[in-house]
Amino acid sequence: MNSINSVDVLSIDEEKLKFRVNITFNGNVITPNRGEYKFLLPIPTALANSNRYDQCVIQCNGFQAYANIGDPTWSNTGALLKAGVIELQLDVPSSQATTTTSLSPADSGVGLSRVGGYRELLFLEINSIGDVNGNVALAGPTAAWFGSSKSEPIMCGNPFGKTITIINFDPVNDTRIWLVSNAAGGGAGGADVGNYTYSFDITMIENK
Image (cartoon, rainbow, N blue to C red; front, top):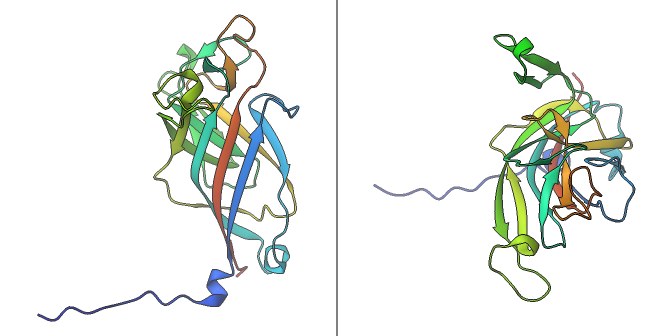
């Protein structure tokens, strides 16, 4: 049986509708509402600003968080936390995602549900990225949290040209979270010392 060589034929017009957005925050030097970060998403081409494209699909392709300290850990305003997952939230219009939690007796059998906006569960793993002294063994100053998701893109409103809010949300504790120093100088509710990087793919959808 003869094998057949095949190639993907890409349409230039279709490829022009795809955009990659990479965002990085240094919580130690900006003045965020800890765990919540804002940025202006620029309009890269005229297509992203056309009234023919009011909608898009958005997918998070990756997340990384680390801190240049010896004892990084996650925190909210009142406690140090063990975080195995982050719900990444964007205040981009969408009716395609919901979050339901059951964290109190009152929610038992029913749950507390929230609808709207972009929501993506990122499952966290810790790996070593080394430190400035050449250490690579996994330890406090070399550790970085990586978040990944197998979810498909979801439909949202056109985000370009708008100020966007990103929230690192802990669905288990129902709160924003950020990286702090575990030492007495930081501790629960301490200063945000994290560096956070996100990568998104955005594909515009023509109005029908």
